[in-house]
Image (tube, rainbow, N blue to C red; front, side, top):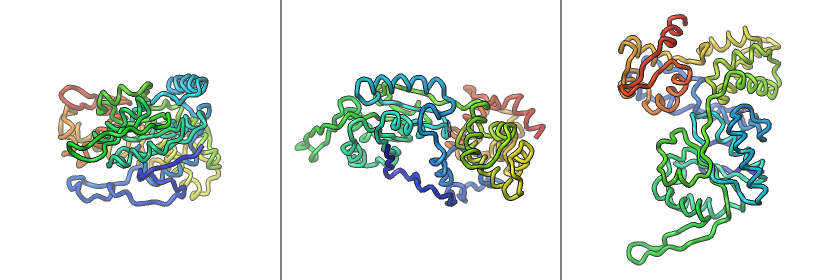
Length: 362
Ligand code: ADE
């Protein structure tokens, strides 16, 4: 199976070089008291390109997401049996849970190629038409952040998804006409963190709509053990669980923590990752027992100290903490809701008793 990436800004080089994250360096956030890089944001960084080396490439090697795997196993077997591409698939859920990985696995299982792109890279009609006409029979086209497709790209996709046909408009104004170009049958895999932002005509064209959920501790523990093995660093099971607990239910984050703990123990000349050295390392990196970092704690304590615990609107939280509204909503908040530290009410966000007691102890 070949992986092709198309103008998506995602690096496919596998070296571990650190490229400064522009957003992190932004000077705009003037009311933020201090800005520290975080290990526990699920958005991919260039460093996560090393993730590509440790991704599972078959369904059987993929840990967690049991229901999703079962659904896909059936869809793949049925499509293969008919000699057809699999139905178009929409994957949604918080970042870092394995949407791209799953798309690459489906390509492996279907024995086809996967082209990877992201909606913001499909700005002009020719961006998407170029990709579509070059697909081979059965290929997968993976479009990340599909909720960000513009209207023209989206409308080109409708006949492509439905009838494997590309309708190209030639000329302008009254003399314009539509030319239909046949496409090879293909599978579109769309990925999004914001399923609610996808228009219903687009959503309705996916035969399979599947949610990825946060991973349980035991699943993440298994992923941490697997990653440490691939990194060839001995790890005790308790240590894997300690890292998993702080991995925010997200493989991308847990795997990043494994690499940082490995760095720490290696420098300390400790031959094995143990629960105690892992906990010391992660405390040093400012990742607490629930995987919260400085920004999470700032948001929760701002709600408690300045707003009696809420409810408070998202705009107000963003203004009071200097954190970007979209980042709070799409990256930070889903995990705080998941672990029951935050509640969403019609009047805004409120902290829970569980969050209060955690912050008092830490
Ligand atoms: N690495 C990242 N995600 C994984 C998963 N779900 N299973 C196994 N290894 C992984």
